[in-house]
Image 1: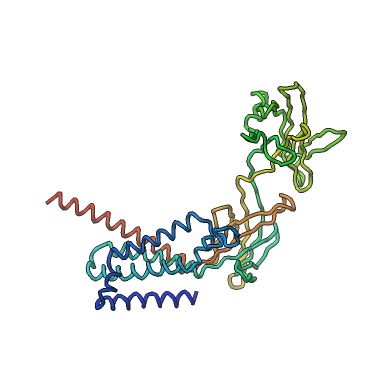
Image 2: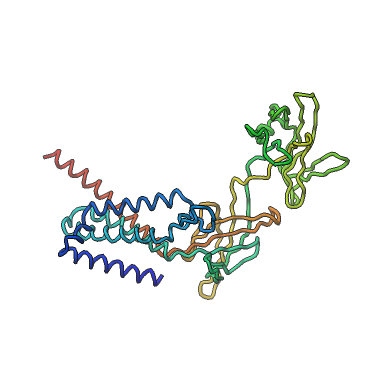
Length: 388
C-alpha cells in the first residue's frame, strides 16, 4: 500500500509539472488537446480488448503465453499505456477546469481518470490468498498466491459448517469402449434423465422416458437419485440409501432394432466408495452413466472474529460469483475437490484484499453524478428555451 501511495504522489506531481511546462512549450501543449486524449484512449481500448478476449493464465505454456499475452496485465505495455493515458487525461482535465470551470464535462473526465487510476493502483497492490480447509475445521491462516507463496495469519478464522452441491440430471450414453468417445461419432447422442417425466411415470400418470441411440431403444423404468448398486450372480441390483458414497442409479430396458434382443440392467456413475455400473453391448461398445455435473454449489461458513476481549461468530454463505466481505477481504468460493467423497469436500476459498477498490467506486460515483448533472442541465435548458 505504501508503494502505491508513493507512486500516486509521483504521478500527480508529474501531471501538474508537465501541465505547467506545457504553458511554455508547444510540444507539451499538444498533450492537453482532445486529439491526444483520443489517441491514448485508443491505446487503452486495445489494452482492454486484449484483457477481455484473452484469459490471463501465466501458468499456461501455449503460444499466447510465450509472447506475454497470458500475463498481459503485468506487462510493461499495460502499465506504460495506462500511465500515458493518465498523464494526458490529467493534463487535459486541468486545462478544461481552467477554460471551462462551470462546465460539467471536467467532472466527468475526472471520474474516468479516478477509475483508471484506481484500477492501475489496484493491479499493483492487490493481494490474493488461498484458503483450503475441510468441513468443521476452523483455520486462521491462508497462503499468498505469488511466485513465492507465504503463509499469512488472518484477523479471523474460517470454518466450513455445511456444503451443498446441486447437480444436473444424470446422462446415459453409449460410448466406444476403446476410445471413450460418445457414439455415434458423427452426431454424439445422449439421454439426460427427465426427473419430472419419471415422477409422473412412477405415479402412474404418464409414460416412461424413451430414446433411441444407434440401434437401441432405451427405456427408463426406475430411477434412484441416491443408491448403492450391488453386483450378484452376474446381475446388477440397486437399493435406495442415504449412506456415504451413494450415487444416482437408473434401471433401463433396452431393445435392439436390428436383432430384437432385449437387455435390462442398472446403470450408475459410481462414487468414491463404489464402482460405476455399466453394460457391455458388444466387443467395442458399452452403455453407462456420466459422472454428476454440478449445476450449483454453496458453502455455509462460520467466521470467527475477535473484538477486544470477546469473540464473535458470524454466519454467512458463499457461492460462485457471490463473494462475502469481512475486514477488508472479499471471500470467493474458488473450487471444491471431492476425491475423498461428496460428504466431506476439500473446499478452496480465495481471499482478495484490494485497498484501492473504494477509489474505483468513488470514480464510478463521480461519473454517474456528472451524467446526472448533465441530464438535469439539459432538461432545464430546454425548458427555459421553450419558455423564452
